[in-house]
Image 1 (cartoon, rainbow, N blue to C red):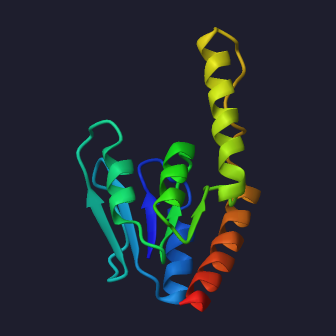
Image 2: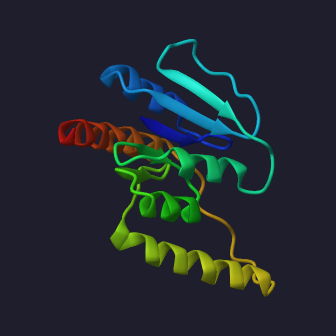
Amino acid sequence: MILVDADACPVKEEIYKVAFRYQVPVKLVANAYLRLPQHALITIEVVSDGFDAADDRIVELVTPKDIVITADILLADRCLKAGAAAVLAPNGKPFTEDSIGGAIATRAVMADLRGGGDQIGGPPPFQKKDRSRFLSTLDETVTRVLRQG
């Protein structure tokens, strides 16, 4: 299954495209109802708007056969620790056991700088090449996970 941290996910259409191609179920987890295609493979679970409610539910659901889509570094870490087959950011960057520590450290440094009043900006704007890279990476990841059984 593909589990999606759906509230601010910019690549839902790409996820559906890959899911339909490989007949892989998708579960979107969100704090509010979202419009989605009427298809048996696509479901949504709406959770409370409590702090980390969607993240907590995704971690509860994740299995070693699941691919998680999230931009949230701390959720990515939790999903890796819970045994997810793969965790991908919407820009196509995979979160791995080797890379997650550095991502968490960078996130903490940036939060400290912002907390100190530094004007450091945010992440770069989401671009067409990010969408394309995500689609390619998700396709490759689904193929690999399906092969592993």
